[in-house]
Image (cartoon, rainbow, N blue to C red; front, side):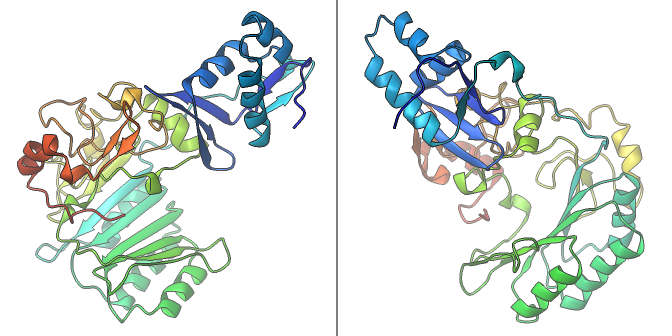
Amino acid sequence: MKVEQETPFKLIANCIPVKGAKRSSICDLHRGSIQLIPNDLYELIKKHEGNTIIEIKKEYNHKYDTVIDEYFEFLIEHEFIFFTATPELFPKMSMEWQSPNEITNAIIDIGRSYKYDIFKVLDGLTNMNCKHVELRFFRKIDFDEIETTVKHLNTIKSSVLSIDFTIPFSKDFDKKKVQDLMYNFPRVSSFRFYSAPEKKFIPPIDNKRGYIIYSNQVLKNVKCCGLIDPGLFSVNIKTFTESLKHNSCLNGKISIDIDGNIKNCPSMKKSFGHIDKNTFEEVLENKNYKEYWSINKNQIETCKDCEFRYICTDCRAYVETPKNTFSKPLKCGYDPYENTWEDWDKNPLKQEAINYYGLEPTESIS
């Protein structure tokens, strides 16, 4: 591959390098992909963007010409850079994250013992201009109840753009009925069936509508959240820019647990009200409600040195050191200092926290 030597290079604006402790990454926010790179290449990009390859080689006294050529072949092959005689005409992409809505997403848990009016909840979220909702059922539910819930969103002309359902597996939800529902009601983004006979992923039927996930894991309670896994990485502009200054899980979130308590997350202990007594607006007036919204990965132990920190979620409900607000997420098994993954629940250093929260290894859905 012939590499342009005498024209300055520029990074594609949506290809963002992120430095880690031992290696770095380039997040392609347009394609939704990530490539791992040596820290040396990260430093070269950050220091020399806008220079020519000849200028770069000269600065290093031509000691690393072969390595530099290999680096640029890699960058060209993955379409991370381009060459231009006017690099000053190509500014960096803005890294500002903004939302016109104070609440952007919600998790609503529905259990066996306590019953509240789901229509009232959806009305309240619509009043808050909430865009994304996940309904998690910890009891049996029939198809008609799901369909009625979705139809209600249409009736009230809800602000909710996407709704995800996490429900126990039932033969009442055959694949065609679910797919027809998602086709007729585009708000429905996904169905996740737990306690299913087998694991299966069914992609959108026309690459636009919702998808279906079957999991054979048994979901006992709300302690299922917080898992950090490469399969859950979200490589896009929204997640990346929001993660720079905000918490990637709790920012803009409101939740209701199975007892009707309004919280940051159903798995967190602190409650700020009850759905039968308080409105979402009243809860947001509590100055402590947004305590975690601005805790970002640059502040969190270990995460601040991770090359994946802006594309993964961040759980504050379950952390390695429960009394430390800035502790690493408990359910993360990645070590950025060794670049290794392990099962989070097998790490002996995590056992004290696992016992503290009363967690079981199976209480995660991926």
